[in-house]
Structure formats: structure tokens, C-alpha cells
Image (cartoon, rainbow, N blue to C red; front, side, top):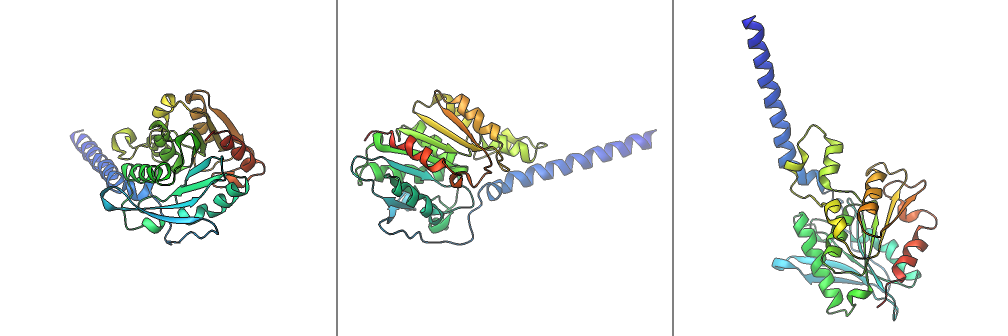
Length: 271
């Protein structure tokens, strides 16, 4: 009997050590899991657009793509998804220009042209805030004419900028409730809330938002559950939620009727 108890104790210790090793590995490597920048570092090219290189906090460069809005029209400020970079926003910029709107997109530290920097939640917020300060300052676009738009990871940045009062309207495409929630879906055995360094807690911030908001989510999203977008739609006061039939995670913008819907919502901002 003692031998059985001893073996059970040894097994329990081994399991405990194994679990601790998993937790430690997840904690140490979490940012390399969360942030997935493209391997290429492409320069965005779009006729009529300007590629800006700004001085960010601590002297780190902040890159932005800017298309001036027609007189009296709002500007959509887009925060791209994970595994994307500034150059990937060029088709969207062209679509918004065709709809009669301005466009401004900010690169994340660690991505694309800013690949030498280190991505963290605060670093992404700092780059976004620096870009928006330039947009409303040097470029003269008032807050009332700024429509904040995020896709996937970019929703976390857009929500934070909205909470800071840096835009008049908010568009969230394929949003998540928080990185902790996403982590629990991927590895439910881990104590996610205690481990996550970069939380992007959209659900906690949602009830505090006070601006017109449109939430779109692919009904067949294979990456972020559609229910997360629906939940944010319920949490944000007065928000409108649309589930896009047939859309997955990365193709919402490409679905028929989506761009016109986004453009109509954005155009309602009054400079």
C-alpha cells in the first residue's frame, strides 16, 4: 500500500511539474504567440497617398498611410489585423477613396516598416495615439471627422483610442472580447487571466464607450467566435451588430454590400 501511495505521489509531482513547465512556457512565449507580423516588410504604394514617418514616443518611428479626404468628408482611421502590415491596407484605402472618404492607417511596432520595434499592447497604443495626434494636429482633421476602424487585433487598438475620445465613430470588424478569453479558448487548462500581459480587454471597456458604433462579424468566423462580436455589440451602448453571412475571419471586407455599409456609416460623421 505504501508503495502505491509513493508511486501516486511521484506521479502527482511529475504532473505538477509538467503543468508548471507548460504554464511557464506559455507565459514566457506569449507575445511571440499573440503577435504574428508578416515576414516581409513591404512599402505601401498608392497613387495620391502619402507615406508618413513620424517621431513616436522615445524616438521610435511611427509609419502611417494617408489619403486626404475630400472637402467636408470624414477620414477613416484603420487599424489592421494580425499577420498584416500597412501595405496590406492599400486596397481598403482605395475602396474608401472611391466612396468619397479619407483614409489613414497606422503601422504597429514590430510589423512591416516598423519591424525593428517590439510589439506590446502599450506600444501599439502609443503608436496609434502618436499617429492620431499628427492627423488632428499637423494634418488638421478634427476629432468630429475621425472614424476609428479596427479589424481583429486592430479592434483592441480602435477601442482604446475610442475610449480616449480620439474619434467620433467606431467600426469593429471581427472583434474579440479580450485576449484572455481567446487564450482560454485555445488553452483552457491555463490560468489565462493571471498570465496574460497584453489583455486588450475590449469587453471591459465596451460599456464605457459613448460614440456611434457598428460591429461586423463573419457568421462563419473560424478564428474569433461570432458570439464575441455579438457580445460586444450588446455591451457597447447603442451599438449595431451585423453578422455577415458566408464570411470568415479575414474576408468580411470582401463580402458583397459590406463596403457600402461601412462607407454609409462612416460618412455620417460630421466634420
